[in-house]
Length: 272
Length: 346
Image (cartoon, rainbow over all chains, first blue to last red; front, side, top):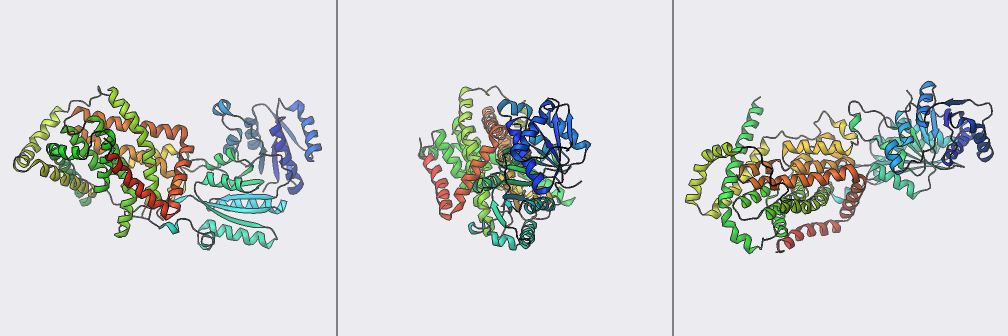
């Protein structure tokens, strides 16, 4: 669970997004935040944190601060390896065009290589009211759902559990059977259906609002379409884990979502 | 072991009949000139329509591509028209994935494919092959690849002439050319059927690798997989069916299917390339090579640079077409009418 948080601090406008998210985590989840910055940012760290305190209510006095030499990616990954953290919070670097082509995505690289869950801040959040959790319907989805429920409980947020059916039948099924109804799917013995039923029952018993959604199509496109249709504040997904021995052959869908999601995104890594 | 020997013998017999069929077709091709003239097959478009419709009639693309080469060998079609007919054969064959799947389903067979896969296969083939056809036209008319020759095939042709020459001579001496052509067609279809029996049978749900289907692979990986599987099976519809055991329930992830079809669409030319070498006409090889290179060029261009956008477009079109029965019916009418209309284009 997200108790021990590593927050990457930088002086950019995007860096403000991460500060705002960290302030919410402190307030609602009593997270223990460690501030991490590069040597270049270090002289301005106090000023940045002071401003974040005034703007977002971020508490920082007496909390640990770490300064490391290197790029943002390097210092985050080094620090995450040096100390056990539950969650890493950072903002995207905003690299575009040629710079993106040459240097790649900062958040993508951190999410792939970090040994903790990663929360990419994409907006200056003042509240977290609606959470979308996308599940693949496999045993790993249990960890993703657990983390999403943890956030939903802490923020008293409305949780939407989404499963995308990306499979097409090779056998002829008839046009009417092409898109299964949500009710039929929930009644099925598919793992995703069971996970949706259990999450709904569990959170409803705690007085929280839970929606379940089923979409048919390409996974990334359907999740982004769901975000575009509804006003979610946070997307929760499973982090990409190596698939041995096929890892080099398998697409990193989590990375695509982390890079293209227009809202803050939490990539959950199962506990070691 | 016995099964392996039987399969080997089937493969051998299939190849022998394939060569015999090509020889018969080439000898009988001249009789088709008045018939093709009456159909006004005199342009790349009409040849495209002819190949397309013929693939519908015999429910396969490979025999039509082989026939196109024999018509070229018999000086009935020009190089450009042959190129058009081969392209048409692939467009027709991609539609056959849908049609054959449905027919096989009605007959209670396993070799079936869904409406979505059929539409998807047709759209992928059309969107790659049509630009490839334009490029191939430019390549063929410029003579860019005319210098490409594959080794010294003279001894092979002498050997084949020695083996098949007397049979072909006996038949052409006693039968009208038109009958020889029809006989050649029959032997060709028979050779594909026998060759099909040499292939390993695909059993649904019997695979030890069913978990593999849970993942979304990089497009390049599925592209290579489609190429490899189709190089062995020689048929796009068969290689699509082979995807079935990758998923215990007979489902494939839609993220994986498009690059797989693209790869399959390239190596499906393996038998056509072999046919081009067997008809003793050097330019036939250039025609098939041009087709392969142009299709590969547009497939790789798409995979490497526009894959995301292309995938979304094809998925969107497939979804639109299969959303309502009447849309699907309109689509089916369209893909039947278009080749007929092309056939009328002089």
